[in-house]
Image (tube, rainbow, N blue to C red; front, side, top):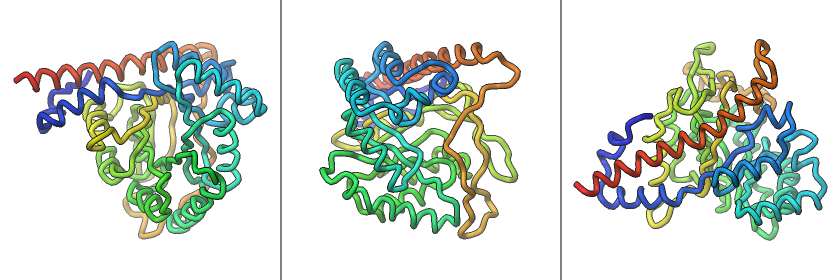
Length: 335
């Protein structure tokens, strides 16, 4: 476990008091990607993800509309989705929906799912091919349709940094879109592919961040840039106490982050998209949504069991980091 004491050295008493209160009330969510292989190759369903979140005492579930293949929210009937939403309410779980696109058609589909299950938040990210400037322009245009797609304005939308755009470019998209219901989602590792460090990315995004994906990663050399290699929490490059402390302290009167989703991705590998010598307006290649493939040299059932264990372990690991941070803050306040 990393030492939380050094993280707290620069905090004043108000910040320490605020940190303790926000640790006590942190909205930890399960994330369906932590069971990605089980949802693709096993029999884990969205209902099973509700059970996982509830059994671990979490506040909610972030779930992609397509996770679960033929059992996914997208594949369900409106009546089945309504039952899923009712089950979540019964378990006192908040549901956030995710989709891997910003196109009008895909946002409309995600909004229909969200409305059926009673979700109030949709995460998205662009997957356009072209120059960075053209990707940004198209994404801003996509967000211009939000009020038409959600005329009752009941939904919030988060734009995730997802491997290709840099953090200041995402902030520019959110600001230029001009929609107060659009904010940013900070992922602990997705900036690596854009040749950014986690600290630099958070600094650029911080004023607009309202949701978080928690995971650990390593950076690999890739054609002069960095590939992202996801690993078990605590085994990579992320300073969890530092990162969680910074995120928890965002917002003055009230916490700025509404969901910290536990997204263990051990084994996920994605290539570099941005490079130090790329020029002013580099080209972004098209890519499919993120996926993780099971290792060829390991029996599938062994890998599925390992994924389930990793997901449960991450819950304990993050709670351990938070407990250590809280204890260190209490001790410093007593001095």
